[in-house]
Every structure is written in structure tokens, then in C-alpha cells.
Amino acid sequence: MKQIYGHFKVIKPNTEFEDYIASKTNKNSCILSVYGWSVGETYYYAQRRPCTRFFLTNMVVEGWQEEEYRKSILKNPPQAIVYTQSGANLEVARFEREVINLTQIIGQCYQPDSQHTGSSVMYPTLYFPRFSGDRLKVCLQQNVF
Image 1 (cartoon, rainbow, N blue to C red):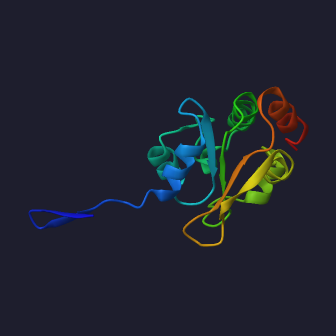
Image 2: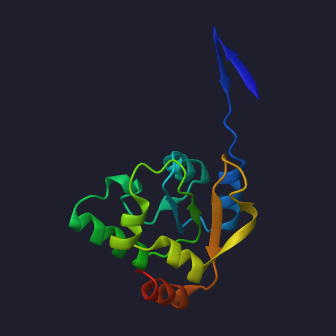
């Protein structure tokens, strides 16, 4: 949809991916969008809060930040994880080895959404929990490293 104001065209962004996340998650739940360039957009357009105040992983550089990032995610398990390593401007292997092993957590505690499996550059893979409640928290704790 294009609207013209003066000499500028305002184009509504495509938010199908974020709308989908919003439809599959509770308004009060948190989500985790890691790496890539559209992390902030995911939270904003899905209207879901991040599970940690450090929603940009490349800003987690000090030991206390790493500990808080990990504890926040363990305390508030994401109801959706948006995951891609494309566009990450940090050393993903080091982050997942020293801060939190998201690949391991995703593999054991989450399942890929059949409609969003990272088949295009525009959309990363979307994961939803295999378990709920305390069972999900236990799974995260067992797979943090």
C-alpha cells in the first residue's frame, strides 16, 4: 500500500513474518530473535518483548552481561526463537560456547515451524517450544552449554 505525502512515498513494511509470530504467541510472552540484522524489527512488529534486556547479542561483551543474558533466558523461556547466523556481527561459535548454546537448546527444546524454515534470506528459521512450563525450563537448563 503506497500513500503519497508531498514528494515522498510511504510504503508499509511487509510484516507477515512478525504477524505470524504474534498470532502464535501470547501477548505477555517473550520471544528471542538472535543474530542477523532485523532483530529489533522482529520485536517491534511482532509486538512481543525480548526475553532479555540485551536484545542485541553483539552488545553482550562483559562477563556480567553474559551471565545476565543466560539467566534471563533460563528464567523467561522464549515462546518463539527466530534464529539465523546470517548477518551476525559477532563470533557465533564463541558466543554459543561461552554464553549460551542456542543451537543445542533449539535442537533439544524447540521444533522448527513448518512454514518458516529459513528457506530464504529474508526469513530466518522460526522455532516453537517442544515443551511447556517447567518442563521447558528444565530442558533449557540441561542444554545451556
